[in-house]
Every structure is written in C-alpha cells, then in structure tokens.
Amino acid sequence: QTKAEEETPRDDQGAAVRLPASSCPPASSNCVVARGRVIYVEAVDPDGDGDAHFVTVSEQGVTLPGITIFDVRADLRPDPLPGVGDLVGGAGPVYRGHAGQKQIQVDEFHVAR
Image (cartoon, rainbow, N blue to C red; front, side, top):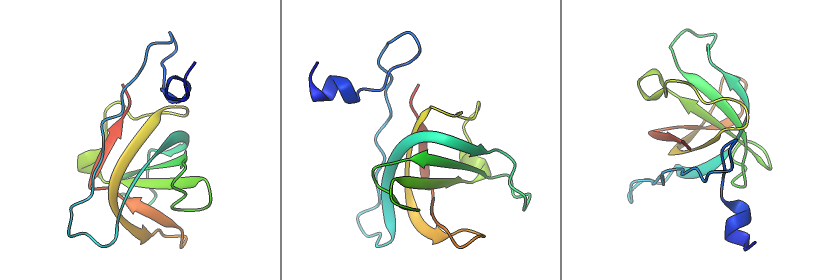
C-alpha cells in the first residue's frame, strides 16, 4: 500500500469515503481549516441554541495538541449527525467556548459519506 492508500478513509465495507474540501475566505485572518475523526458528540448544547459540538482527533490540534472541536450552528447541522469514528472537516474562525477552550465556529462543515 502507498501512504495515500493508507490515509484514505474507508467505510465498514472497505469502500473509500470522500470528505469534501473546506476553505477559508482569502481576507479572513482568524479562519482555520481542519479535519478529524469524531471521538465525542454533544448533540444537545446546554445553552439551547441548537448547535452541535464534535470533538475530533485532528492533526491541526486547534483545541489541544491532536484535538480539534467543531462548533456547528443549527443551520449547518448535518442530518443525520456524524457519530464516533466518522471523519468530519470544516472551516471557520477560532473562538473560545464556554469553558475557555479554543474551537472552530464553522462557516462550513462536511462529513465523509
């Protein structure tokens, strides 16, 4: 296997899955693009605004080394929601969450299908 073949995400049957590319607007100074495997889903946010949070293992390490949190507002929530083990990606500005953690408040969000 080549390195590219090893890194290609696959579904349960071994078929390749595709994660659409994300991008930041050229003039954006606080925008980050990241991708990662979901390790935790907060489907119901305590503040009741309808967003969802996805904690991922991610090379970009926005939140902590090796960890990126995606904050996905209600109008961008995928249906069905991705679960643990799914590959997700997105882009948006980095802001502090309610606990002080850095997270991407996505302007675009994708799930490998």
